[in-house]
Length: 405
Image 1 (cartoon, rainbow, N blue to C red):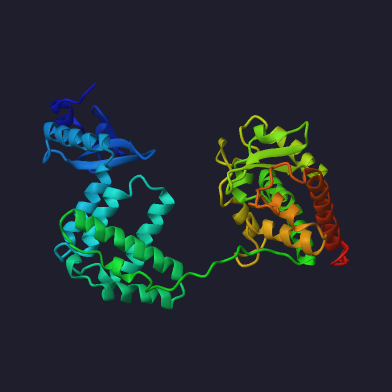
Image 2: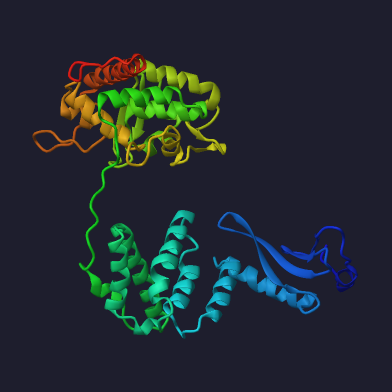
């Protein structure tokens, strides 16, 4: 039932704050100190939020409902009223008229609501850390290409070349927003084409020395986290598929009769087959009591309805003592690529096919998913046995011959 003015007037403070519900998400928060505050409860982007509407009796019940209705109208249009209110409040405190910071915050509230939380956080960090301190309070119309370049050069001097590139892209989006809203005529970031350093392509850190691989496999065996994560680590080494393919693996992808996994490769979008060695089959069988009722082989620890987080394997490696410069989830691919070629002497095209790379034959045609399948079955079993041999050698302190295993 909606509140009445009499109920609001007679609401008395108690030992703890409490709420009196009105309608359409609005409620009156009665504080233990005697305050009466109007609030609107709503959901935006899957999260529950609250909008501070005002205080009673400065804001009457009727006026509070009018503000509530306006806020709900904005929600219907995909606008977060709380974020908009915060942006307006902050912009009013900025001294410079049409400053870069004011317009950037307005742009963020208007354009970033539908982006992922990770993307939002990264963009906010770039604005707050690298752009606002240098050009934030300058009128956006007065910012020249050299002013922006000076801010970006400071980032390059710190070695964060890729972040500098992203900062230039973010600044350009703010300038273009200012143009379409009539507060700027030019995007100075567009004049900086080719001015920044080109980021060097970074390879994923990987362990490729046999003795160290044995130590890694031994560390995985001794991992003290959940069994699901341990199994994912072991399968990362056995299958050397892309991390996203392992995380999203579904039980429906496991062909028990043919002893293989059948998926769509993440990068090439082509059908891909992962032959299952005996060790992998045992691991999958051990996972069935744990996740067999889930869609995913390796579900999230936050719920069986979603796959394992993209950071799970990375965090597990860190827990085991392997830093970012030592080993990554993607590094299992380089590990297998090197050792299968240089130590176990398998043909490169078989390895590349198993890595789900876009391998082509002498006539320029892409190999089909079943190409060299029998050879790949034998290779994957030998690879699993070799990992076991390296682990046993690490356990006993023996050294396996680098060329013959």
